[in-house]
Amino acid sequence: MTSVKMTSANPASFRLNLFKISWLDWLLASLLWLLALLFVAGLVHIVSVFALPELAQKDAYSRLSALTQPGQLSLLPAALPGQEYAPFEDPALVQGVCLYDLDRGPLELSADIIGDGLLTFSFRTRTGRVFYSMTDKAASHGKIDVLILTPKQLEAVEADDDEEELPQELRLTAPEKKGFVLINALAAFPSERANIEALVKSMNCEILSETNK
View 1 (cartoon, rainbow, N blue to C red):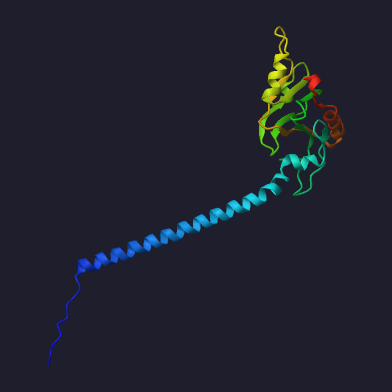
View 2: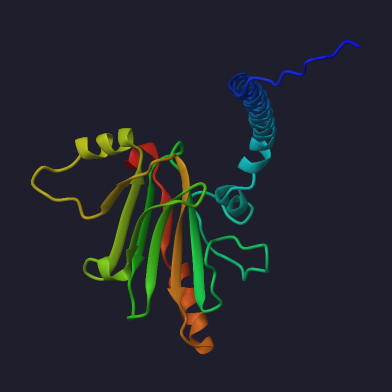
């Protein structure tokens, strides 16, 4: 009867083969993860490209354009849930808005400050990002006077300045050609609201023509 001699595997060789298999599994898993990541990134990019036109139509400037026109100051209506026209709307605030489109010319905003109620002005890009803000405390001799311009328009205005006389208005260079000014005025009591609305309506928001620049 022939006997068969059983030999055991070399432990070192077994560990080496196990390492090779584990390394191959890790490599395949990494490749699959990378492919999945590239697929998701490509899908997000495609969706973003198709969604951009619709999203652009829903920015703050576009929503406000349904209520007013550049160079025209308008009071914002009371907001309904999910239909706010401006950020941080508060029932105690009277809000006015003035759109600007600097392709039409610089925007001049002026206001006579009456009383000591809270009054703020925020200058925003079309998406609503604030690039400058001020309160009624910045008034000079009871008046706010601001000019919003492009860098080129600012150069033209400065070229016409009288060297012996300082500019009376605050000049702001807007980061974008389209945007808006948001005016917030506090009506501390309901009985004050009509007077505060009249104050905001009395402010002047005007696009300057080429001859006025």
